[in-house]
Structures are given as structure tokens and as C-alpha cells.
Length: 398
Image 1: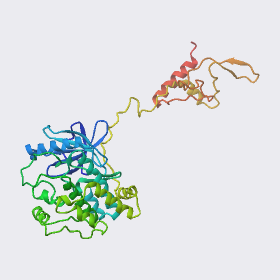
Image 2: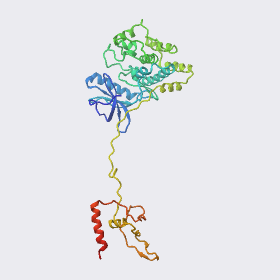
Image 3: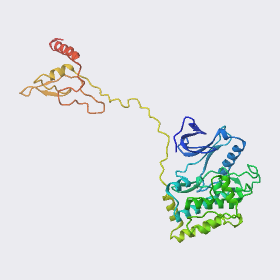
Image 4: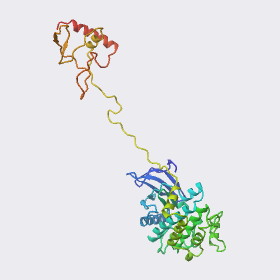
């Protein structure tokens, strides 16, 4: 993930963009948040490639995702294919794609590869049940989340019964490394077996780190795929997976196994390892590294009135009393409303009301027993003035 640049928009279609997930020849993908905080991956088509054909393909992808729903397909969230800059929002999957995982940690173990294949076969079955073909299954389009793999990017998906296509006959569309021979030849009358071939190529990559056919250019790879005399490269493939992968990569589409057959054979392989399908799936998800998902920064809170200001305590200071208290041997004045005993003989006299001392609403309003007033001590020049006033007050007859 990369931070947004000045060229990136800050919001699209009601989603606030957090960071950039990736970019390709067709557009960019952003991690975003809805107003309510739901995170989604938003794909935006580049203006430089936005022509009639591209918009039509994008609209096809939107229609496909509206149709397909399942646990192994990234869910549709929202889209606007008619916008000046078309966008599509799908479920955000917090995990790496298969190519990144294999490049970082190496090929998957046998049981984990078998689990990946069985789960993806179920996911493709959901796509096919909706009357669609994916047509571009590859490691980059498979995300590994903590709860299982997810198939993404239906940019080349077409309805299985559609008789018209978005490109002219003979024009190759898709990623050639996982492409079946019939698609590499530019044929458009594809069926479910095309996705079975692509799944076989994906599993070969997951188990070995390489593809069935490789070459310096896509044209060189396509020639190898179409050549009956050139078998797929199954080097380093575990022998337990060899027969199934070879069948899935068959040159003749009619001889490839169906998806239910693929699931059955992979699950049997898992059982032969002494595991259940669920245990193998947990081993697969345990390989998924924990990803810290960025989010929008929290807004700055405005301080409420009075926040951070010291509490104000109302205080009255009788400076004259303070002056008297500071004299050695000064008597302790009585609290208002009480009697003080001054004379040794026990004769009492009434103490007149005194200035209120340290009063705090809601607390005991009786001042402390100490004769010293509690308050803010005035500055020097004010104290001198108050001393003069206090001396005059003590001598005054009225």
C-alpha cells in the first residue's frame, strides 16, 4: 500500500480514500471508507484509457459482480460506470494475492495447495452457477484472507450464453500465463473448461512457483500453449498432484475434469494426508500474514468551554484578619454562629459575624478550624494599602 499523492482524488462516489492499494494499465485501486466506516476497495479507470470499449468492459464487470455472490468471491459494494471517471467498489480483503505470497515465502505445501484448489473450485462454481465465466483467473486475482481465498477482478467475465463479445475475433484478451489454448487462439466461444484450465495453472504456480508455459514475450508463451507437441512444464510438482493438474491442463477442453470432479479429487488427496478439508483450510489460512489495515485519521476534537482551565474556587479574603493572624499570639477567631471562650473564668462572649472563608458550593460550608484564611495572597503594594486600611479600621469609632 502507498500513501495518496497530490494527483489522487480524496473521495470518490461517497467513499473517502485512505491509500493506494495498487495500479495497473487500466486504472488504480484504493482502500476507502464509506461515511459509516465500511472499508472497501475502489477501482478507478484511468482517463487516458477511457474509450468506448473500456467503458463497455467495465460495465460488464459491474454487471457480473451484481450477479455473483458467494463466500469465495469479493462482494459487490457499489459502482458508477457512467461517471466521468468510472469506479467500482468491492469488498476489501485484508490479505496478499497468491503471487505475492508465493514470491515471499515460496511454494505452498501439498495439503495447503489442495485446499486452495478445492476452495477456488467452489468459488468458480458460484460464478458458473450465475451463468458467467471468469476468463482471467490468475495468481494476482486470488486474495488470501484469514478466512479463505477470494476471487477478484471480473474485468473479462462474460455471460456464458452471450453470442457477442467486446473484441474482434482473433484478438487475445486476458493474462496469457494462465490462459487455455482455445483462448490463446483468440476464440470467444469458451465454456467452463476454460476456467478449469486456468485453475490448473494457478495450482501449478502455487505448488512450484512457475507456470505451465513461460517465455520472453506473451506471443512466445501463446505459441507454446497452442503447440500440441509442447507439454506443460510440471517440474517440481508433487507427484500426488501430477495426474490432476495434467488433466486440468489438457489441450482438448472436453477432456478436462469438471469443477465438482476437481473438488472431489483434491479433497481425497487431503484425506490421504490424514487431514479433513477444514483442517487443511486452517493450515492454508495460517499462512496468511497479518496485515495492519490503514484507516482515516481521527478528527481533531474541539475543546469544550472550560476544558483545560483550572477550576475556579470562589474565595473571600479578609486582609485585616490575615494581618492579625500573622501577629504572634493572635487569638483564633470563632466561627460564625458559635461562641468562643476567651476568659479563664469561662465567661463567654458572642463572636460577631466574620467574612466568609474558603466556600465551595456543595461542600461543607463551615470554614476550617484554623484561624488562617485560605486564599490568594495579594501583591506587596496591595498588602501595604490594606495594612493602612486595617489600622485605620481598628482605631475608628464608627
